[in-house]
Length: 482
Image (tube, rainbow, N blue to C red; front, side, top):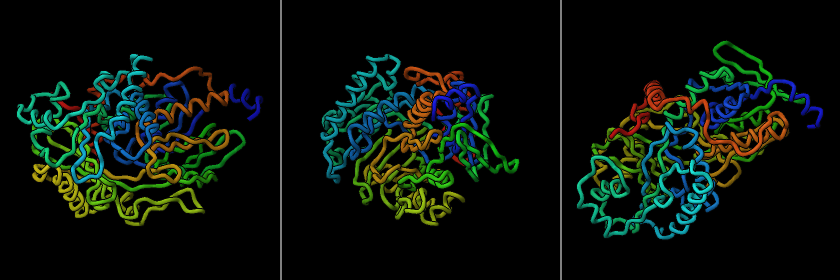
């Protein structure tokens, strides 16, 4: 774009169109409206942040043994910014990483990475004390050898967890040390409430006069002009045509459909996944627990994510539980959109068959009970959380990704993990600044003014309404109570 064009744009209000109101699109809209930019946000479903389930930050990426150290450091920085941006959506409890004796891995192999991430966290806090979002840097992780773990089993369950040991005591009461390799590792990877995040975005964007939010609305045609886009859409009021200066494709696993409409090609994968809900009658506050295992095998990773009142979210990285046979697909040569098998597309559009939901939930319970025998008492507690995620490129191990650009005024947000959404939004701000449509210098503050005006109580109340309206237990939206 030439200098004359930049000058012309500087004389008119900037309007950005965002297609998709998931965690990515909602975050872009929040960032831009917070900076005084007019946004048009189109979301095809009934509410914001209504896509694939997420349940935790990745503050160091320790859940994934196979990803690079650089991705872990990136996820750490992004997670810290996410806590600063969305403080009322975070579940502040640690994660415990355990390696079963049936797994080929060695927990000591994780220590060099943990030390590297802890050093980076210390550096970020030294650079800016506001980054101390994950506790004290010196407490970022803690290793428990077998003798320490067995000693904790002799201590009573705490009324509330106030230190690392308190979080480990419930595990020590329930886990057989003979089935585990040591050390066990406790790390400050916090939980993230999907429904409190949805509530945060809904409250902020519906209150902002700068955001034209249209739910139940989808784009049907795009037309690129020299310096703008025409967006044709259909919604509750029928067909509309809007002109925007910059277009953001934030359609998640359907990003390729918008690329096709825009005339762009992009290599990507789409993976269909699900998580399951169970009630386990325990009273203690639990950390999240990750039992490492080889993905796609019967011993695949098992993940236990706690919520109030004995509700737990379960992942089991096998084809019978969280993963699905032929559920990872690449786009064909003639389209930017991967095509999932018909059965999965039907589930995405129409929901789950009750029998299959019960069967897979029971498998998830049994998968966890292999390692945590008392979990066999757990019972299914609701419909699965499910969805598809995009992975840009061709490497299914990619976890840290944010945004890519085409031409002067088209961006596609390509996050794999929710904590990357703010980075994507900030890169779009940088692009708009580069185009002379914004006058902004220096790094952006992670805090979002529209969000900082909210109270924890109103976010939680709205989140409970959203969870129940979508047919899920209210505990998914609640904060832990002492």
